[in-house]
Length: 470
Image (tube, rainbow, N blue to C red; front, side):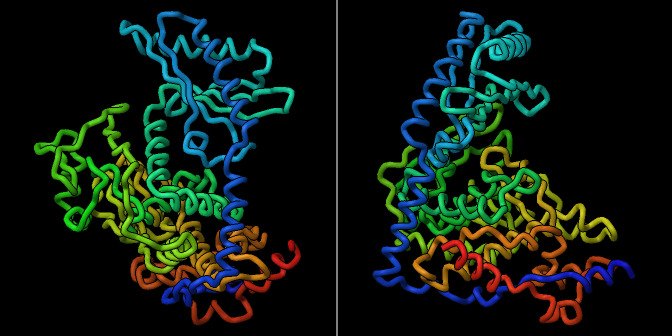
């Protein structure tokens, strides 16, 4: 058939399953110095310089002056959010801003939309604000524009009354302040996701990748589960209670009820957790990071290797969900009853439709438990992501290469790898039994289709790339 002929013509990536049982080798003095130098370079790049900070402050002042001149009765505030808030942006990053607007109680919704309309008109008529576009039908109103100064043009987004977005940004910031390794791990992860062409709006954006990273760090006890605590002094009892919660369908379900018959309690102290309502959702998290002492003493390279190894080799996307709220990437998908994602077996039973509808990856939004942050990611992309995790673990395990340790993670992918999603078929290996039993059609025969001459020699191609960039 046409499908079989296509499969036989395909090229495949090496499975890289050999990293499953490996360990990150201990770095010698030279390699530690290399890693510290690489982290310092990344830190300088992922920290906006003083000029960018000054420009952001100037932009906020100008926009506040425009907004407050519309109606003195309306209370307006404007601040940075996202990566600009928690300090993981470059000087060239877009300016992401959040404007909170409180209009008089009478006809508040009508007054809110009228205020935004007047604000957009003012932006369009003000020098320096160009290409102003109002996205009225977005989940929250968003205005995109270009801010032009003598230093050039700067892409900007401002969202209105986006309280949950601000809460998520502040929680990530708190996690990053809890332990200095958190920022370094997330910084490497973000650089890796960008350079390897992983983060994208058509599958999963950088927020989803960050959630996967933070959840792994919580799972390894580098950071505490902030949404389940009133204290950051976790001891054996707290970790034991957390482990029991993560395994219990009943306890998990009780956390997600809109009206709990019993209050939600801290896994450490047993105190009732506060209920901070933002846009109708409970956005509570322990905002205090001072005093946390992690029992995990691994280095940043060891944590990175463990993260890539876990997701690439141990993580079971068809069975498990990633939940930062619960502090684990091993939560049974079936136990997150509010998460709007079909179980894989429900989709795999529909011949001719499973490729389009299969959603292997479930990444729970920390404040909106019904939202899957990987809802747009199709099966091939997810398996490609897990392959990229295995590749990253293999790169780190190889140690220093021509004066590099971390930098080899960031070599741009060979273009042929990304020209067709079907190239990821070889890494469906972990799902073959499920797929073959559930789908009444030929999926993939590794013994026939995955012959040596069809495997892309990625190590050779990328080694040549690394050598050429030195």
